Length: 351
Image 1 (cartoon, helix red, strand yellow):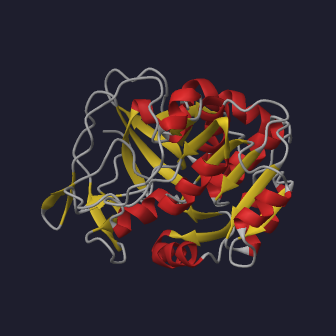
Image 2 (cartoon, helix red, strand yellow):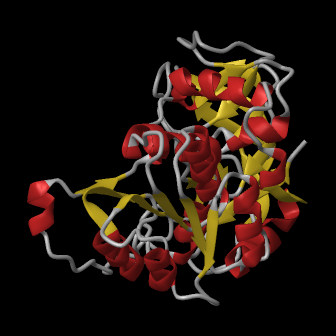
Image 3 (spheres, rainbow, N blue to C red):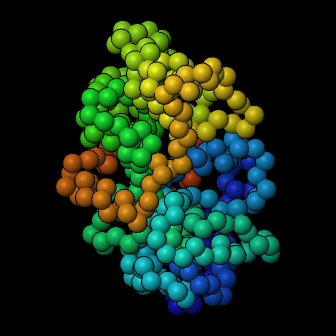
């Protein structure tokens, strides 16, 4: 394997609800067909990783394992059959399937045992990733912007385009204004929705939401959400309610306030065992509940199209990045995210 590192530094999830372990992992001797060796340049920390750590989906049978699913990287080597990227290319690393081979997951060694890793991981200095989790981009694209296309931007824009299918002038509530939520707000603004109501518990996120296109903001720690929606005359008339929290009460509230033909879009995932309680009859007459899986985004098709908006400065991204940290400080970044001290995305600089 050309340019093969013997070791890489990585953040490892060893036990749920515990800090990640920073340690060296050992790489395999060669790449398998469809695998790509990359040097990770930057990575975002997504809310879904917080859920992984806390066990939101229940018992994790793959522990210990590597983490991270949005990043920017440079290709160091390619395995047999790879045709979409070449050595030296800059790529976006993403968890949604794109073009190319879905390879076998890499087999690293840690503590003299095999370490689990999926088709892409980004909380490591180097990684072996599947071809279909890489999308080639111009070397001129800013590393920070590129990493956000691994999830935050593509999920946010995909939710609006593919799940909500938002139309001009439609009303939308976005509950949860983190990294994905801010891009849902931005995409809603680009689609000329009105009003665009951002809801969160933190003022710093809501102030940022206004920059991204929110026409109204609601802090649920200070204001009753239903009262504010009532003032706008949207109870029973709202076109789209998008939940990023996974909170079952919020999901139930969203279902109640959308119109008879409205859409409830579920981006956040409730913890295992937490169920919603709704009256289902309206579902037979036009009301819809739609579960989103990364906004159903196709990275190979959608990333070049969305990138154009950012290159032409039609869409924002620098404002989304509220803190940069080193890999050694990843647990500090995770703590800040949990406490709401960061409004947008925390990026890990791994250069």
